[in-house]
Image 1 (cartoon, helix red, strand yellow):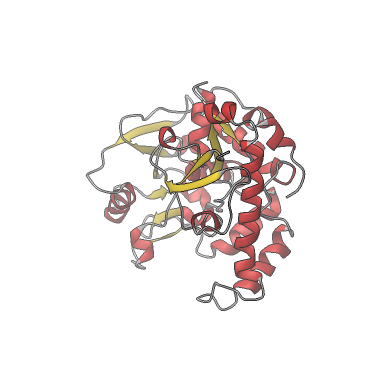
Image 2 (image 1 turned 90 degrees about the vertical axis):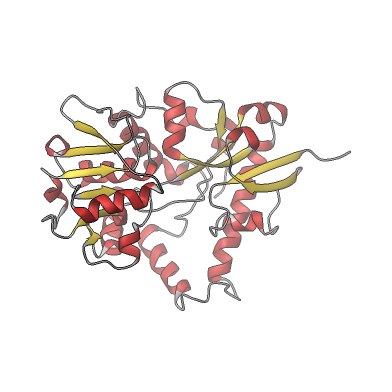
Length: 320
């Protein structure tokens, strides 16, 4: 009897935590795996979904998806706060009274960076003039000013970068490194030049390791194949282990960073041995923080419950 097909789509097929699927090293037990780039949930059975996007659909109760605690993309987001070098912004509180653009209303990176600025650094958001690309410039609180921002054609990162270079805005909270920063243009810099130390201190103080993507399945596929969520979670755990072995194993594949294994030791010393766990227990503080931030910033009408967000058997699955 032929095994059912499992169509797994990827927003980022080449990152190290996803590549073991796309290069054929890892499969999903009981299924024939078919990998593709993400083109929309209607074309696939599961994918590495935007956490912020999932919060939006879940909050609207328009959420025909089932999520599992596999998080292939995680990034601290203090490194993604960019400022115009002439704007007089040297510290987080200097953002007060400035013009700050965010990438999108429910952009995951901007939820995390706003949460850190508000709760960890105590920035007064009511004093900031916020800008949002497009026409959906809703405020998340009566005392918060949010204005629409017209962008020209082309990638949004490049358009926001140009506004920042011209001084039309003073800071940008984005999901990607701005082009001017990549090419080392001195007119634009990170808010935190030593972002590694800043992000390590943020983790030590809060226990939050921001999650960008949460692996999710179409509910119809799960109804047809009830074993799929747990099978996929187990496969993602194997893929994560392969990714770590390619850095820390006996024959490392990451050769352009000569001390990659030593950097992993450093990260484990700061964050613990199992800092990239695919379970609920080790991620409870981060997941709870996202639920709180998303509600506070108007992405969800109420604070969502972590347990209700995940498939019950995957939620309860023991292990890392």
